[in-house]
Image (cartoon, rainbow, N blue to C red; front, side, top):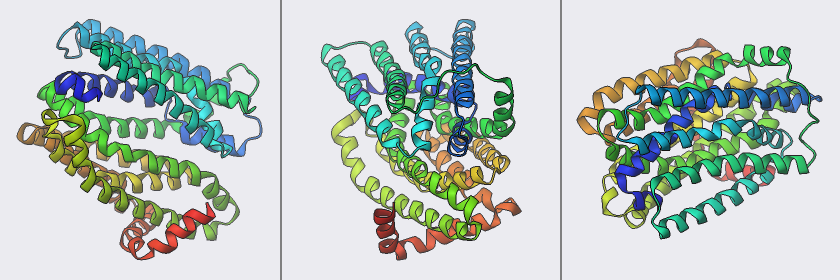
Length: 408
């Protein structure tokens, strides 16, 4: 509804601002989510780690907001008017509150993530209702930027309060330099890889805005978001399976390979199902929900949706690399995907506009999540497991779904 109300040009401005905020987030969080979650699972004393990372994120979030503000004032970012500058500033404000999002990792580590999901969905429901009211009142784009910011801020704060209510938030402890240095030593490849992932998921919108127009960025944003609807599934699946995989990895290494193969097969099967459902049903939604002005988004979506297959497999592989502490390979893969995406965008966007950006994204996803596994000898077994999962999962669908439903 918001996209239809704002129309492609203004929605492109809003999407561009949100992309800038998303790119800054891995820097603020120092790519530490997987590492911190794993430490929460294994370490009994969480206070030092929790409050060190909490204060770090708030400090880095404040620094990021100041940096964006200075860049806008200096004219380094291409803007259409002053309103666009304010939209970008508002989109970066939630970075200051990113420390509260650590509570989600506590819930995930203790297998209580459902409470966080419920809290976030309640916030989303309230914010969505408010957006409908804003549309009814005919409000400006700044109000919608503010509501997006409120959604991110309130989600973090509410999750923190839920975790505190469950007794998970540890007693305050002064931040520790030793803990911070230890996390940085382990996380520095993840900072680069997380930034690379966010960049090649958002660089298309930024490059369309810079090389073409905000209207093309808006058309692409609608298509990409409809395919990104499915991205929460591999993330949620990974959060559910991480404690289980971690236990098997440490307790029974021989059984771990079999468990990892089944995890790949589940991701492959679900990715096929998502693509089939979305490919044939979402075009109808684009027509009825967004109207004729977004008709070009249909073709873009039908190309972009195939990236979901590689997102599922890449997320599954990332869990293994995290457990094995092979963060350097994850970093190298995502950097390679980013370089390919940017290079293809420079070639394809002038020729095919938003459709070219979608093709670039799918190719870069395939390289980063799958083809890169063949480039490193240490990942050759993972490459074969990924290939086997894609080829055999449709024939094992009944067994896989039965196990997924009853054992998890």
